[in-house]
Image (cartoon, one colour):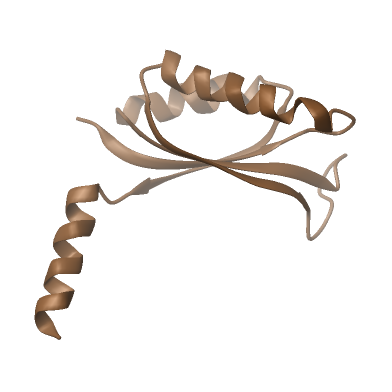
Length: 111
């Protein structure tokens, strides 16, 4: 069963701002190679962290929206944990497109 997910990845681009596109393309390929179907990739630019918890004070934020099996999330976490260019990662399950459309129809009908 395929679910929709959102993955927010913070990339370590310290000293390599010109290669961000290549890194994002490589990560997108990793998602697809593992069996995920990418819906959307949002490049949210480089941002300063509110506090420095490690060696970095800023990172490049990229948001991936994709469909995948639930077991794939664990595999992706493990894989990206070993990737030196992925500084942080967060995954969240989203409602399916069908559920979103049904809830907006119900909301419109009650008005």
